[in-house]
Length: 157
Image (cartoon, rainbow, N blue to C red; front, side, top):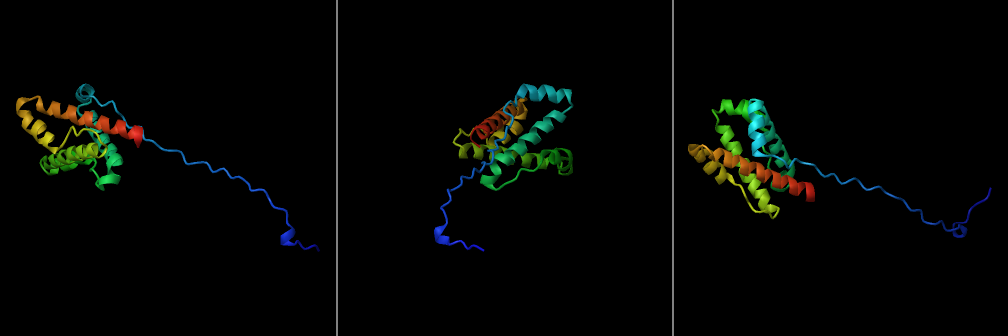
Protein backbone atom coordinates (compact mmCIF):
# COMPACT_ATOMS: atom_id res chain seq x y z
CA UNK A 1 0.00 0.00 0.00
CA UNK A 2 1.35 3.26 -0.87
CA UNK A 3 0.19 6.34 0.82
CA UNK A 4 0.21 9.62 -0.97
CA UNK A 5 1.61 12.54 0.85
CA UNK A 6 -0.61 15.57 0.12
CA UNK A 7 2.41 17.81 0.06
CA UNK A 8 4.05 15.80 -2.69
CA UNK A 9 1.09 15.78 -5.08
CA UNK A 10 1.76 17.36 -8.39
CA UNK A 11 -0.25 20.46 -8.98
CA UNK A 12 -3.02 19.87 -11.44
CA UNK A 13 -3.63 22.36 -14.15
CA UNK A 14 -6.93 24.12 -13.76
CA UNK A 15 -9.48 22.72 -16.11
CA UNK A 16 -11.50 25.15 -18.08
CA UNK A 17 -15.16 24.47 -18.04
CA UNK A 18 -17.22 25.95 -20.77
CA UNK A 19 -20.70 26.79 -19.74
CA UNK A 20 -23.04 27.39 -22.58
CA UNK A 21 -25.03 30.51 -21.99
CA UNK A 22 -28.76 30.20 -22.18
CA UNK A 23 -30.00 31.57 -25.47
CA UNK A 24 -31.52 34.99 -25.27
CA UNK A 25 -35.16 34.58 -26.16
CA UNK A 26 -36.51 37.52 -28.03
CA UNK A 27 -40.13 37.38 -28.94
CA UNK A 28 -41.04 38.11 -32.49
CA UNK A 29 -44.26 40.00 -32.08
CA UNK A 30 -46.04 41.13 -35.22
CA UNK A 31 -45.47 44.72 -36.26
CA UNK A 32 -47.60 44.72 -39.39
CA UNK A 33 -51.07 45.35 -38.01
CA UNK A 34 -52.76 47.63 -40.50
CA UNK A 35 -56.19 49.18 -40.53
CA UNK A 36 -56.84 48.19 -44.15
CA UNK A 37 -56.10 44.51 -43.50
CA UNK A 38 -58.06 44.72 -40.23
CA UNK A 39 -61.16 46.00 -42.03
CA UNK A 40 -60.99 43.86 -45.19
CA UNK A 41 -60.19 40.55 -43.51
CA UNK A 42 -62.73 41.39 -40.82
CA UNK A 43 -65.42 41.68 -43.49
CA UNK A 44 -64.36 38.46 -45.22
CA UNK A 45 -64.22 36.46 -41.97
CA UNK A 46 -67.36 38.05 -40.51
CA UNK A 47 -65.41 39.69 -37.66
CA UNK A 48 -63.42 36.68 -36.50
CA UNK A 49 -60.14 38.11 -37.80
CA UNK A 50 -60.78 41.36 -35.95
CA UNK A 51 -61.37 39.54 -32.68
CA UNK A 52 -58.21 37.49 -33.29
CA UNK A 53 -56.05 40.58 -33.92
CA UNK A 54 -57.38 42.37 -30.86
CA UNK A 55 -57.00 39.28 -28.65
CA UNK A 56 -53.45 38.71 -29.90
CA UNK A 57 -52.57 42.34 -29.24
CA UNK A 58 -53.92 41.98 -25.70
CA UNK A 59 -51.73 38.92 -25.13
CA UNK A 60 -48.72 40.75 -26.57
CA UNK A 61 -49.43 43.68 -24.27
CA UNK A 62 -49.49 41.34 -21.28
CA UNK A 63 -46.09 39.94 -22.25
CA UNK A 64 -44.59 43.38 -22.84
CA UNK A 65 -46.00 45.36 -19.92
CA UNK A 66 -47.06 43.00 -17.12
CA UNK A 67 -43.67 42.74 -15.47
CA UNK A 68 -43.56 46.52 -15.09
CA UNK A 69 -47.13 47.48 -14.23
CA UNK A 70 -48.25 44.23 -12.53
CA UNK A 71 -51.50 44.19 -14.49
CA UNK A 72 -53.09 41.62 -16.77
CA UNK A 73 -55.39 42.40 -19.65
CA UNK A 74 -58.34 40.05 -19.83
CA UNK A 75 -58.50 37.78 -22.86
CA UNK A 76 -60.51 39.54 -25.54
CA UNK A 77 -62.13 36.32 -26.76
CA UNK A 78 -63.79 36.07 -23.36
CA UNK A 79 -64.80 39.73 -23.45
CA UNK A 80 -66.16 39.67 -27.01
CA UNK A 81 -67.97 36.35 -26.95
CA UNK A 82 -69.25 36.07 -23.40
CA UNK A 83 -68.84 39.00 -21.05
CA UNK A 84 -69.78 41.62 -23.63
CA UNK A 85 -73.17 40.00 -24.04
CA UNK A 86 -73.73 39.43 -20.34
CA UNK A 87 -72.90 43.03 -19.42
CA UNK A 88 -74.75 44.54 -22.40
CA UNK A 89 -71.48 45.82 -23.87
CA UNK A 90 -70.18 47.57 -20.76
CA UNK A 91 -67.29 45.12 -20.38
CA UNK A 92 -66.03 46.00 -23.84
CA UNK A 93 -65.91 49.68 -22.89
CA UNK A 94 -63.96 48.77 -19.76
CA UNK A 95 -61.55 46.57 -21.76
CA UNK A 96 -60.85 49.22 -24.41
CA UNK A 97 -60.44 51.94 -21.79
CA UNK A 98 -57.94 49.84 -19.85
CA UNK A 99 -55.87 48.62 -22.78
CA UNK A 100 -55.67 52.05 -24.38
CA UNK A 101 -54.39 53.56 -21.16
CA UNK A 102 -52.01 50.67 -20.60
CA UNK A 103 -50.51 50.99 -24.10
CA UNK A 104 -49.96 54.71 -23.55
CA UNK A 105 -48.32 54.11 -20.18
CA UNK A 106 -45.99 51.50 -21.66
CA UNK A 107 -45.08 53.84 -24.51
CA UNK A 108 -44.14 56.51 -21.99
CA UNK A 109 -42.15 54.03 -19.89
CA UNK A 110 -40.17 52.98 -22.96
CA UNK A 111 -39.41 56.59 -23.88
CA UNK A 112 -41.72 56.67 -26.89
CA UNK A 113 -44.19 59.41 -27.64
CA UNK A 114 -47.49 58.57 -25.98
CA UNK A 115 -49.81 58.27 -28.97
CA UNK A 116 -52.84 56.70 -27.32
CA UNK A 117 -54.68 56.87 -24.03
CA UNK A 118 -58.11 56.13 -22.65
CA UNK A 119 -59.14 59.65 -23.67
CA UNK A 120 -58.53 58.68 -27.29
CA UNK A 121 -60.90 55.75 -26.87
CA UNK A 122 -63.68 57.89 -25.43
CA UNK A 123 -63.20 60.78 -27.85
CA UNK A 124 -62.46 58.96 -31.10
CA UNK A 125 -64.25 55.66 -30.71
CA UNK A 126 -67.29 56.60 -28.65
CA UNK A 127 -67.96 60.25 -29.47
CA UNK A 128 -66.29 59.96 -32.86
CA UNK A 129 -68.86 57.40 -33.91
CA UNK A 130 -71.19 60.37 -34.40
CA UNK A 131 -69.04 61.45 -37.35
CA UNK A 132 -68.69 57.82 -38.57
CA UNK A 133 -64.89 57.95 -39.11
CA UNK A 134 -63.99 58.28 -35.41
CA UNK A 135 -63.77 54.54 -34.65
CA UNK A 136 -61.54 54.05 -37.70
CA UNK A 137 -59.20 56.80 -36.51
CA UNK A 138 -59.09 55.20 -33.08
CA UNK A 139 -58.36 51.71 -34.46
CA UNK A 140 -55.59 53.12 -36.64
CA UNK A 141 -54.02 54.82 -33.61
CA UNK A 142 -54.45 51.72 -31.43
CA UNK A 143 -52.97 49.30 -34.00
CA UNK A 144 -50.14 51.70 -34.80
CA UNK A 145 -49.31 52.09 -31.08
CA UNK A 146 -49.24 48.30 -30.64
CA UNK A 147 -46.95 47.98 -33.68
CA UNK A 148 -44.57 50.49 -32.10
CA UNK A 149 -44.55 48.69 -28.75
CA UNK A 150 -43.98 45.32 -30.38
CA UNK A 151 -41.18 46.65 -32.59
CA UNK A 152 -39.45 48.15 -29.55
CA UNK A 153 -39.86 44.92 -27.57
CA UNK A 154 -38.56 42.83 -30.50
CA UNK A 155 -35.48 45.06 -30.61
CA UNK A 156 -34.70 45.73 -26.94
CA UNK A 157 -36.72 43.19 -25.01
